[in-house]
Length: 194
Image (cartoon, rainbow, N blue to C red; front, side, top):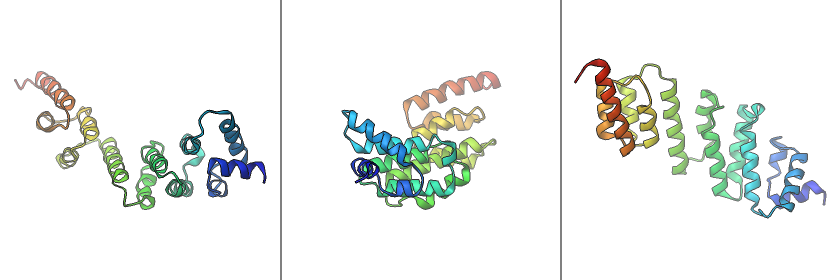
């Protein structure tokens, strides 16, 4: 058996990693050398690092490679790690808006955690790309009852008095409600509404 075959088998890489050119033989052999010398014998840690490494490479962000990434995460024998790798991809800021939207087509639809993370990121991207926060968008964001979305809302500088008041009364956490209270005071001071 060749060294690469031993390395792939021991580290439990699916052969598609190399077939899809997401990693190469030299990389796997180096990872295997680390594995042999390390006290960490959890093979999923090495594969997870490979997933994360891809997200740092500019050349990775093609539609085809993104599809392969999700496929490999879905078929990995350690499904907890596979889901974590998919979450890393969903939260990756290097995805274009089109790639992010297409990502939904590749995701397993039966996982509520992935659905929640994807939906949260979709809404955060919406907030980031919205220059004029309409009441409709604000209401949608507020209705999520998600503290991350509420925090992103409270950090905007274009909220109206009514929107700040809603976050003050309906914000998901005490921190968000307190931030809204401070923002309300600042709003009133600037706009002389006290």
